[in-house]
Length: 583
Image 1 (cartoon, rainbow, N blue to C red):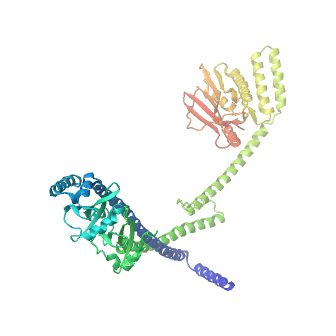
Image 2: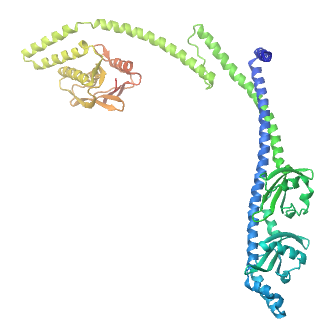
């Protein structure tokens, strides 16, 4: 066992080493060819076998269903004929005449004959295939006959005796043609007083054969329990089955579960099926030649062979183009990666296709772009950091000294009854306390609004009552957190660049409302406005400007938040700020 495993391992290793000596192109073509030919062959064989079995089973199912429908149609005709025969047997006039027939004179017999002719002309007109009707006495004497004299005395006695237990069906040859016959006993007081013989042409049942077509060379026939053919579609010899051993053997086992089988008749293969006729001790059977079934299979086999060859050719061509589609972009990507490893970060693959190599190339390009962006951003942040450090050094005046000085000036103004200056100094002191002394980066919206109100008091001292500020705030949001000192630069810009001191009724409206999971802050003025397509000037107070507000929001909450500016000359400006509710 170990030797076998070792041998297999060495063989596989040898194949692997051999393949590594060939190009990817040859490996792809070889693997595709072998795989496709092998799979196509296996698949073709399996499909062919399945198709053959499926067609055979379909033919059997079709034949069985066909025989079932034919059987029902024959049964309907049988019931109709039996009703007609029973109606005759139950006629009291017929029964009485049968009892008294041997005592009747010529006149009475003629009257009975006339009665029967009139009666049958009315009742049996619906039986176009009726060949003969005979009324037989208990002593087997023919008392009435319509048609030809077909039945012999010995046949009448034999079939009459068979019908003593009820209706009796049999087949016979009358006038060199197959006929179906029915014998019905005529009873009075539960005693048989005579018989009704009816002979019907076989067309009455053979007409059911035309309901379906089971293929060229097929046969449909009705047989009795001894395998004698009673009726056939193509006038087969009554001993046909007995002369064919394979068919005879199959039909001898009538009643078994196997109602379909492959047989050989006259050297040809057939699929034979049978079904018991309802209400009879007879069977209806069919034979379908294999050539008819295999006609579609032969056509299918040719088509599958052609398709297989074409498919193999297409696969070989496709494998070559597949190799090319892999080699070219792969080598291009490897070359660019080598240049990056040597320090060239500006190189790009620029592969716009959406396959795996294209995705890798696109990600590689995106990574390089991101690396370059991060390098540039790092450089810019270093510059901004140095600038901020300088500005912070310039602003390092002792805040407590400023706060105490402003309070002293406020009380001096109060003592001199200069309330406007006192209120302005108080607001300025409170503003400085909240913005410089209070080191918390986040404050409530209530506190931020207090800062704005203090700032507005200071600006009104400068600009008088040339503007007014309105507040529309959702009180449910007053305790939500916001970045400190983000509203003042925007309000400052509205006052300095938007307010015209020579006009009245100039307004600044501050709205704070809820918008789903965010807070929307809107600062709107009806001032001068500007062209929003031009670069917004970075107006500053204490070193903090408009751009700084937007950057602080994005750094704190993410790129999905920040400021948006809408402005139009002589109509005003709207600045919208979006921040999250939950911080």
